[in-house]
Amino acid sequence: MSTEKIKILLVDDEPDILEFISYNLVKEGFEVFTCGNGKDAIQMARQERPQIIILDVMMPDLDGIETCRVIRETPELKDVLIAFLTARNEDYSQIAGFDAGADDYINKPIKPRVLVSRIKALLRRQGNIGEEEIVEMNGFFIDREKYLIKKDNQSINLPKKEFELISLLASRPGKVFTREDILKNVWGDDVVVGDRTIDVHIRKLREKLGDAYIRTIKGVGYKFEF
Image (cartoon, rainbow, N blue to C red; front, top):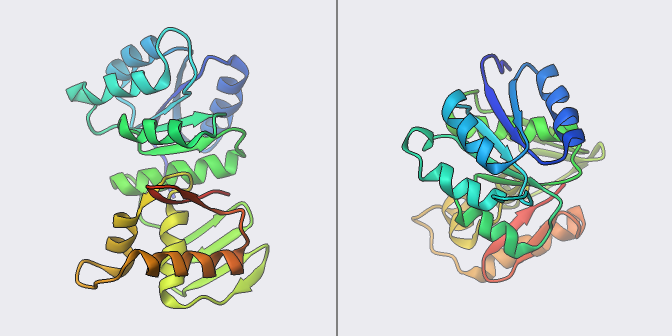
């Protein structure tokens, strides 16, 4: 999978994090630009026109959420993908981030391979790289074509709808999928099902995969966390 000419702007006020993540992304063939605050990020984004901006939330002067809002209001940056990279786990901050226009929300610490997988998933949405039928991340293996899922090299048999549901959630780890998103993508607009149907499928997936991976965001929906 080629990542040639894909520009990433990495924004964090911790130099060690910038250095570590930048090093690993450059190894994967990305062109990486870095800065340590939101104001510089806006200026650099206008100058370099990256495909992806990875923003820390907690930064001095202008935090990540406000930076995201400014970028989303900048016409020449309307198509840039924005992901938050943060140590904060509060649900309200994630919802605020998506409300500000973020495309993904990634919790620290994160392994370089997992971060690269998340970045490639974002790029597939924008059409920069082709859709992968196989997703492998942090002990999970999903083959969409074969309807195959493995956890720690152990195969797990799932009915079609359960597989489609976990495949959807795992396609964007950390993103909160609303019930409307799930119904549309898994059951389609032409099928009438209730919230209870989703809850039952989620419960069955938790029984098979464990409780640690699928989180309920009350009043919103569900998300998958590795």
